Image 1: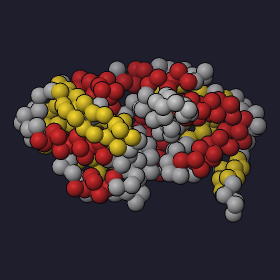
Image 2: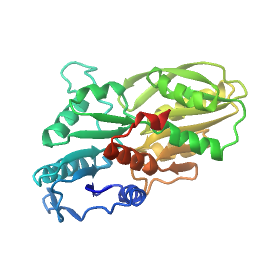
Image 3: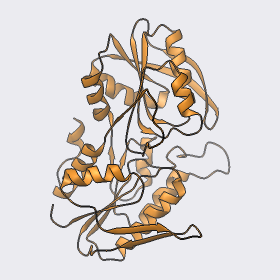
Image 4: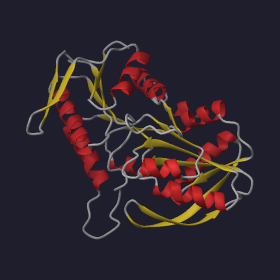
Length: 311
């Protein structure tokens, strides 16, 4: 892959090193530090002139700090005469704020999209957006990858299932559940809920057959795990034999680890789009999206189809 540079921001270094190894391209020599007053400093210590540059960023906690790292890194690249700048951002921060659900509130997901483009990103790669319509916030090409094949491979190779059913924790996740169910060759169920305020969900009912089945809850994000815990309890009460949870992005904030440890969930399977150091617990299984990201980067560079990755 001649003429390609990989520049990694500071968070989730293990993922970026794995992507680098799979592509056979070393990470560029980059200095990213923080001044004593909290300002971010970025310096790229090698030439990127005329190169196709992939800026790799994991927007983990603290989100705003890592967003600023990403913006400043893209700006530094832009001022160094590259051929093209691609932002690879597996977890799209602020993605849950994708509309005005109340008067006088921002559409924060749109603000992030505007800033990414304004600083110089000419192409963006994300994995499992919270809302697919966020793609419409971009005027540059956006590659919306899905981790469903990665999660499916783990389930197929590591779990013995008895009459499975895939469960969507809300109506918005039905397509994701259907994609996994099609691969597993099983049916789906949908949980009906309402959310009275952010990070609080009240599970109401479930539509679908659960009696004696292995229930696989699939979601894009596990944050405080309130929805997942309530859903697992509901599924067990409705006759599910066991509950397995899987999601693309494991944020695990606040009481998440305590809730998941106590919840009637056999396994929690997430990918490494976000760093998970210090967030391990005995039910957790982590699968890597490095092969997916590396293959997407390779195909983008070669002008090959990316959609065929998921067919």
